[in-house]
Image 1 (cartoon, rainbow, N blue to C red):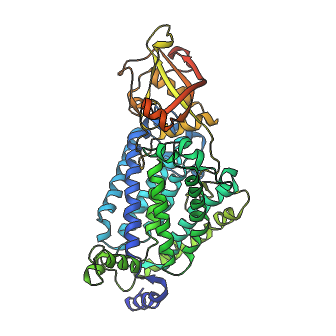
Image 2 (image 1 turned 45 degrees about the vertical axis):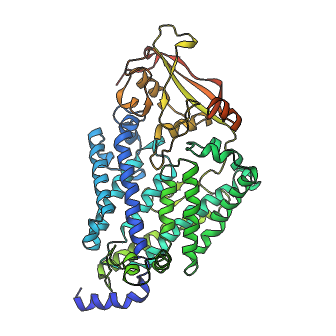
Image 3 (image 1 turned 120 degrees about the vertical axis):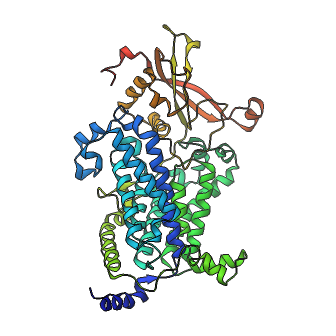
Length: 507
């Protein structure tokens, strides 16, 4: 295309196609998403192989042998090996890290786009073969966010309005979907009693969850009402003129901050905080900068897109305009089913409607568990173990020792701990038997997923899984005993088993 035509096209489109009010938002979205991608790839390096690798609990090789590429696109359909996983995850972490520090953003728009798209493809490849251990809504959220923010390019092009709308649509689905699934689901959300249980029964309590649980009942009612307002009403402000989207974003950030304090939901809350902060326009950031003392002069200008993040040029390359328009058309087409899902009485939670997970449905805690049952894994060195011969394996995040305060784990994701929370709810599989085998073998990779090995690397003769009912200690019980939990046994999940009792051979 001749230079004059390209210049004329981008200049003519500039008034409605591009905006100069979301330069801070672009940086927050790209660098924030890149931080989470980097963390997710590091987790894959630490956990994927013992869970899903060649000797994993759900080996990828078996999965790709029975699932078609078009149903779960992944580079691992070309062949899985632990070494290939390390290459993919390592390259993804490195690429994401360069975006965090801003290296690709120094070049033309397509460099940043290419790096983030490569990270998206790498992480999508991991998620697609992750089976039970990657079956969480925040995996899909990270995939969608990575694809979307890739097209924001670099500071040498202005932010396209259609992508601002696309990011708002993502946050809208994320928040409204979560609100609707609660309202349509468990009656505890409608009668305002859900938070009487949630802080105690959530999958991975945090250091302040015990304290949150013991707040007054009226406060729990307030929490539920606040949740309904934030997720059912506030998202509609995203479609109104500024500063109302900025207000909506600030509300999302504040409420997600409370969830960060009271639970461990991997990077779900942090991804939502990034999206919420990105709703704030540069004008609002400038006003906030004035309030805190940056002023409205050169310092404030630098803070909202000049000196810190670079100044975008007045126009955009024609190629960028065309590419973003095509991407927007694809996203609009794929948005039909997620939009219909929001309006459906049979709303799906955390669902993808196409294999690339580009536009998805979200939601969380459509039902609230009223009691907490925990899987306790024990082993014994004795030939014929008695009641006092069993030792408990300690996990990094999930409750076990009643004296241990729940740790802060998020945004890190302990996948084995999380999946074990679902086992008492009836969500299990053959991987439980493989877990027993790996413990009986004293498999070093598997033991590294745990906090402590009671046998210091020695092979136990027996392993068993018991089920315990947990509840928080009362403040009085805690003062007297120092325990955070009270528990009692409710049954045996897996009877004592030896390596010779398990089917198959060690692999």
